[in-house]
Image (cartoon, rainbow, N blue to C red; front, side):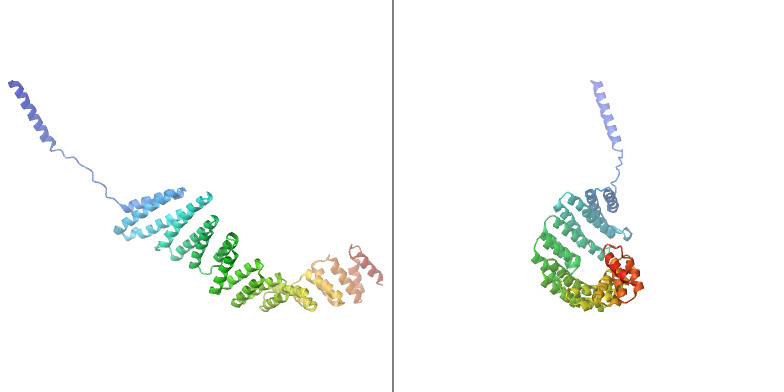
Length: 393
């Protein structure tokens, strides 16, 4: 028994000793690293860029969005050199651009609603963004382009009223934009099949804006639809706002296309009075001559065709004049205009025949024979030319 007690005592002492030793051991714990939102933001931005370059646009959006949140968190303690505001702008624009680039993928799969969602998301970012380094003009262009994409996508999806609304949004920012008015007009005309609304779009705008281009577009639309009276009225409104060479040309062509020869000549005369370059003026006189021909005014036809040919050589018109003067037996004029034809087309047998006959009538037998002998084997004029040559002594 005494031995057992001794053993227990020893055990107790050992335990007490071990306990005392363990209380002196120090365990070192590493402190948690300080969280650095700015560094994390740059890392997320870099990750977003990698995803974007790899075409992983949805992952890019997630990374850019995370970077944006982190940059905002870092902003209160960031230094000016950290350019946090600029980086926030970049992330927002990158998210918008990624949505823009995702939309065509949805369109290719005919997922138009999804494409519209992507464009709408980008649009919201652009419209709510306060420029830092990007200019307001650049931002406005992004907004306009996105609205236009939305309009086209909605149109292709068959959501025509939604497309029209997007075009209206553009017109708020760019009043009177001819391309957008044109696009809206054709959505109503070709897709909605509502000519009344289509033309009303242009009527309302033209009246309020007093814009010549809108009246021209309106006139062209009515002309295409076959409504001569409304087309004419719109053209005259356009002329009142912009009386210039281009307008006179448009209106002259409109009247010619509708066989209103007298009216056409009024505007061709206005165009001639603006003194355009000779190549244009020659065409103007030629058209006036043709119009007078339609009106049965031969004297005015000839007067204008002569003006045209005198400005710019034209073998077709010169041959017409040579034929006319042959009819009225003005032999010198026949020689003049036949020669103009032959200068351009030496093998034109009709002109050579006309000139040969004119020389014969003018008693210039040498010149007559020279022309007519070249035609004795001509299938059209050969017999006549040979007969006249035989009569020349």
